[in-house]
Length: 512
Image (cartoon, rainbow, N blue to C red; front, side):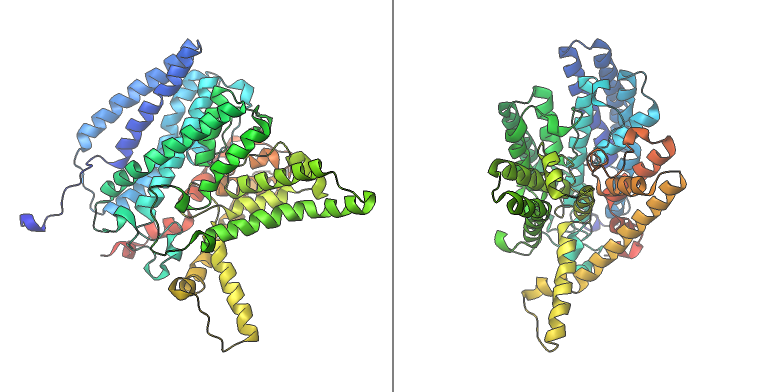
């Protein structure tokens, strides 16, 4: 083969799984340092030995696979994306088992799957785990969120899957141009991965540091502030406390978290993230407009009934309690819409004001909605919801004016035709997956309410919802091993998205 016809070698010749092993080994050193500083020698030894063993293994694999070039790079990286969610959690569970001897491998594996997929479900009460183990859980969720963000930007977005198919539906599963350095679709996927990681890492670290500092000023302890900062930017919802609402920072801390959760509504807020070639001013961004409607409608629905009843009974309104209940509704709405799962300290007051026996049904719906495309959130995503709403609005307009010509430009035509069609397919796949999980969990002995609750929590990546919604008295720690395996599979499936798996199974998606 002539030298001119050969594909250029990648500037980053290590396979993605090997890089992830090396990064995991380095991250294990942080809990080891924390355990040493807090006098937990056995815990420090567990994390340090695991880090050293994994680092040696990673270095040997790096030497063996240096310069490896897969036959189909895009397919290889999608395979690595799926394999990371399957193969990495058992490795990450090893230091947890060594640090907490009474912890079984199955329990540690479930914790790591939950953390890496940014679900945030836990089967251990907070007081049963030492601080370094809590830190490790938070680090896994934080790193998992960054991995999801980079993968969405560098692997899914250039192939128009993972939500980006709504911008160019006719190119579903095929390379399509994005702004920044992903325009060259002929670039090596490995190069794109590392370039996107380097572009996103400063903002990721900077936002985490700012949230940590702000929460420290607000009154949280060092570990609590760091874990809540990492849980906010990654939308994992992992906390070292029994409930987030008991955090010492109180209302000030909730305001900091609220500001941090705004980054999960749109990739436009995160410096370095790729943007689709559709230029919207912020006031016309479909994701932000949809999020704003939900942020207004849901708190209003929760507070409207009690406000009217109190005015009719007393002809006056306790302004402070009203504002507190309204804030609890707004904060919890944004938290669950971004699949984080933090509840406000005012949420119990909001529940009382709503006058509903199970306002947790609102939380189930919000978790299924999800946040922005190419963010760390789960769910069906705001843009898909907007596509279906646009189609519905257009069909209603055609009832009154059948001959009318709809405007809005090329994107508006795409989003309410092919975009809405693909969004509908995703909703159907999501519903079928949810129904299948419900049937499997019901066959394993779970009640209907518990099966619905855990299925939605797993598929949407909102683990804390099981403890907050009060739809069922069953908690994660009450589940047997078999339901945990099913729900862990649901977490992985919800993180990878069904459409991405379908694109992976379609060889024609990678035809040049």
